[in-house]
Structure formats: C-alpha cells, structure tokens
Image 1 (tube, rainbow, N blue to C red):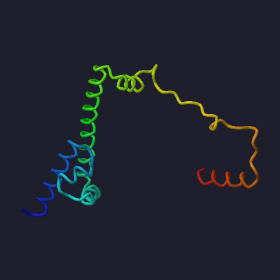
Image 2 (tube, one colour):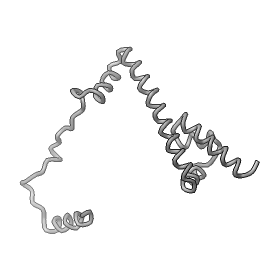
Image 3 (tube, one colour):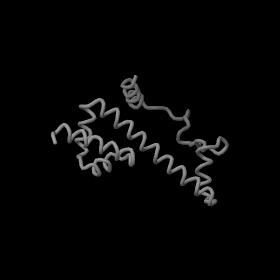
Image 4 (cartoon, rainbow, N blue to C red):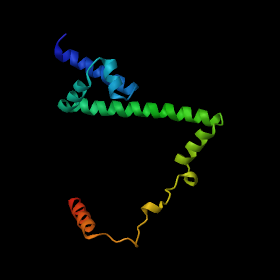
Length: 128
C-alpha cells in the first residue's frame, strides 16, 4: 500500500470516528493517528478541512439528539431538574433573566483621579 493510499484510509477512518464521537482527541486515538497529523491535514488539504468540519457537525448533531432524548426521558420520569432545565432553555416565561448587580451600576459619586483618567483614556484608545 502506498503512502497516499494509507493516508486516504487514515483520513476516512478519522472522519468516521468524528461522526460517532465529535471529540478530536478521541477520534484521533481511535484512528491511530496523532492530533498533529489531523491538524496538518486540515491545513494542507482543503477537502479534508471541509469534510472534517462536516463530520464534526454530524457528530455534534448526533450527540445533541441523544442528549435531548435522554432529557425528555428524565422529564417523563418527573425529574424536577430536567423539567427546570428544559423550561429555562425553551420557554419564554422561564428564561433566566440577568440579575442586576450593584457592582455593575455606574456610580456618579466617585470621581477618577487624573492618573486613573489617563490610564482609562489610554486603554480605551487602544481599542478604538
């Protein structure tokens, strides 16, 4: 078997593992390749880059479906935390609202020193 043929098989193997478990480290170990090799292939081969992104998306979708299925199972078992999680993430009335923190409110009674003003202006200028 030539190096090109072996590389092609290795790439196909790692892509299949990514579809099943979308964790690069795990997929590389199962395919018996180094992570550095995986990332080199992504850099050097635009087709592999696209295929690996597709495989990761497919794997993530699979895990999301399994997770959602298990969550629904827990809801059916009347597990309060599962019910609460679902409502907080899927129902408008139960969405978590950001709490107002007194530390985040602007204070008008505190003045900056000249050094503080200089530092602040300098910092803001860096991002302007």
